[in-house]
Image 1 (cartoon, rainbow, N blue to C red):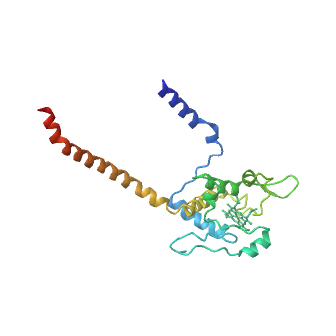
Image 2: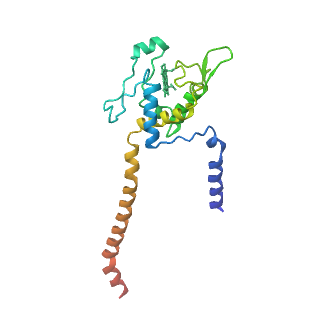
Image 3: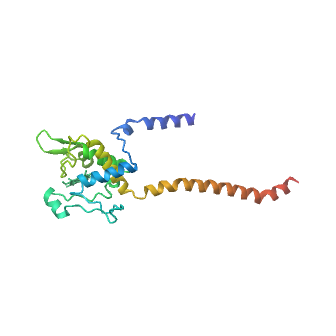
Length: 199
Ligand code: HEC
């Protein structure tokens, strides 16, 4: 009975609309990452740097084309470095989805002026943002480009992820092997004693 209740609870939690809301599928594969880097170089690097990015062709990070002072003068706020932005705006994949949403939810307020829905939710304001839409809202590839650049920024903010993932199966295999060896050692050690008891 208890097990049934637990199963029902798990089923309820998984089907809860809170988990289903605003879902975007962001592909984190190598191709998406490569496309994301080129979107970044095309649409973001004018204002944002990613100083902790380490790529084969950029071993010491990518600097913004506009320095912080010029950026502050132009927009009122200096464009932040994006190296850790995906982790800073939410746990796991949440921050990445936020970056996707910020790029895709620009709108013009009825009284005029550019607003952003994701930024409004994040900052609890009316959504006025100093960043002009980096990818034009009518670009037919807006959704794809936004997904790719957020996937890229996710991997920049979590450089150890690939390594962790590749270590996982080895660690599990090692534990399994260790269990077998210890089990055999245990039976070997006790074999003699158990034999004595039987007599
Ligand atoms: C024309 C300059 C400019 C370009 C190009 C630009 N940004 Fe920004 N960005 C800014 C400024 C300025 C801010 C600070 C906004 C604020 O705090 O109001 C910002 C803030 C951000 C933030 C942080 C929002 C937050 O929650 O604080 C993210 C994420 C971001 N930009 C992503 C991008 C991405 C991705 C691109 C490229 C697709 C891009 N930006 C292109 C100027 C720019």
